[in-house]
Image 1: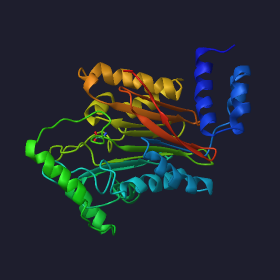
Image 2: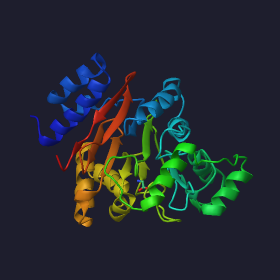
Image 3: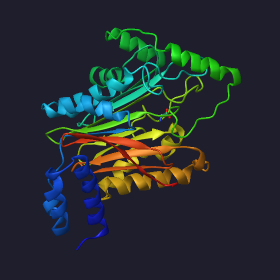
Length: 331
Ligand code: GLY
């Protein structure tokens, strides 16, 4: 019998099968109609990232995963590609500055053993994700912010750099003429790279990194460096990451919610849909904003869902890297 749960189970595996472009999972998806137990062969390794630019991050992560590397190294190296991309105006160098012209970056990382690290409003460092990893590995703390985070980064040997490119400076100067603050749906004014990886051993890690809302107030921090909001991983269950308006994600503690729903038996897709429903319930102007989630469970089943159309994500599994459109609440 194909129950709703089994059907969703199949659907999720079906999309991974499509991402794998072929035969590797055909037997798995067919088996799903016969017996749910038969499909428990996990898909690994795997990398999933928010937005189409996540495909480049997936490529870097896949190189590590496919040569037997671990999920944590893969997720860090993956998002670093986007942090270093000057053309990406929502992550790392080239990210849009705050309203005073300062590029302030937020990032967090989670390891399979549950340890985590985060930096908020970090200036002058191209790779906040690597500073977050050092916070996790070299300090007794989880979060460092602002000047303290910068001092720590410099003490760890990171180089101080100018993150405001000519292009983002010009865009900020244009914005200053009106100083109109209007975050736009799916325009790279409030996007983030969130990434989840599963290695050959089945361990799961996650990373999330952003320059946050363009022209935000000085000191504003979004969901991306907040463990449980922008990112959550539980190696027994799965992981989730969020993108979109951080203020709305934080209210619902979105990524933790997705993982807890999966723990209770929801598929990654069902969990993402329920989390979006929760965000909507808590944010009356939800029609004006975008929030999206990606999720993966221990079997390598994936889910993605957003408030508005236009959210996409990249999945690398079985040697194929594919960008997919997420389903959305508002069609
Ligand atoms: N999701 C990124 C931010 O709101 O800062």
